[in-house]
Length: 139
Image (cartoon, rainbow, N blue to C red):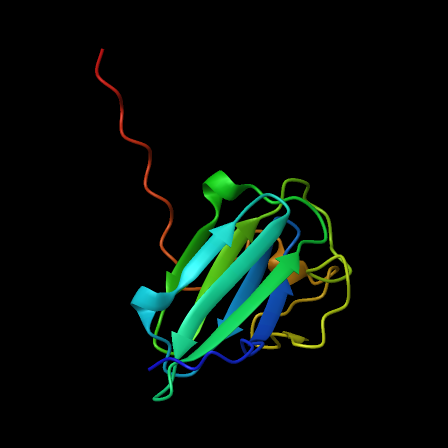
C-alpha cells in the first residue's frame, strides 16, 4: 500500500545552453507508469512513485523565463526523468527557477560556461528523442 505521508522532494540537476534548459529529476527505482509530468511555458510539475515502499515524490518549478512547450522533450528512465526544454528567448539564465530551490543543483556533466566557445554549434550531449511532427489532418 502506498504511503500517505507528505511527498518527498526529488533532487534536480540542471544545465543550460543559450537556446536550451536541461533538467534531470533524480528518483531511484521510479515506476514509469506512476509519473505525471506537466510542462507549461512557465512551470514544470512532477509527481511519481518510487522504491519498494512506493513513496511519492513531487515538485513544482516556476521557471526563470518562458520555454517552448511544443519543442520540449522528455524521457523517463529507471532512475531519472530528463527534459530538454527550448528557451523562448536565447539568453543565459541565472538559475532554472524564479526562486532559489534547495533541491536544485548544477549538472556538472552537462554544464558549460556562457562564454565557452565549444557550446556554439556543438552537439548537445543528452539522449532525448526529438519530437515527432504532428499528424496531418485530412480534408
